[in-house]
Amino acid sequence: QVQLVESGGGVVQPGRSLRLSCKVSGFRFSSYSMHWVRQAPGKGLEWVAVIAYDGSNEYYADSVKGRFTISRDNSKDTLYLQMNNLRDDDTAVYYCARPEEFPYYYYGMNVWGQGTTVTVSS
Amino acid sequence: QSVLSQPPSAPGTPGQRVTISCSGSSSNIGSYYVYWYQHLPGTAPKLLIYRNNQRPSGVPDRFSGSKSGTSASTSASLAISGLRSEDEADYYCAAWDDRLNAWVFGGGTKVTVL
Image 1 (cartoon, each protein chain N blue to C red):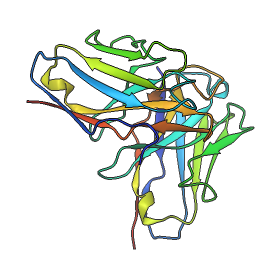
Image 2 (tube, chains in turn green, cyan; image 1 turned 90 degrees about the horizontal axis):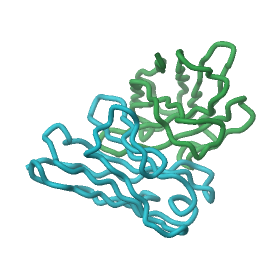
Image 3 (cartoon, rainbow over the protein chains, first blue to last red; image 1 turned 90 degrees about the vertical axis):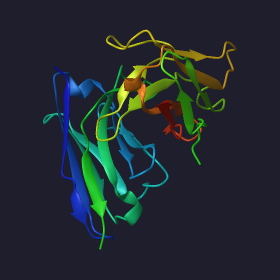
């Protein structure tokens, strides 16, 4: 059974950092690119970042570029999102998601975690 | 302002057919697959349609997706037939964009069953 479980969310002050994790099971993690997607309160879904199956390449939304870093440890079946210099508008539920096929980025997400909540507030 | 444009709302009555449009450009919908998601508050998004018009197992055939017929089409649509109360949710289209090197989502359409 394919599962994605996020953790690491919480309340953090503006300007501080937080690292999210996504532990996966039930599939060959090292074959798939992986995504982070978020939803701010009252807003729609916003794609955040994607990382290649082997960690060799990453792409980011303009809203997080230079502040967030996506990474993975294929030996631990775990995806990460390092979030630095957090802002109020980063407050959101963050989901990790796996594409329906590999290896190309243009295959969309078909498996999602339940999400972890990040609140940026002073 | 989302890169993909959807109407903010789509009301319907039980049994009715509702259609949601998704408009993009040659760098996203015109070149890549379109995906549709159903999202209920507090839950994980659910894949409804993949690769423009394919339904994952378990998704009722009341849901159908299409992308306009030309090779350079830049619009897609999701249709829900036989509308039910449990279809009340937010619906999003999404596609890869090779000009932005990013995934882009529509702003979402709230379907309400009157």
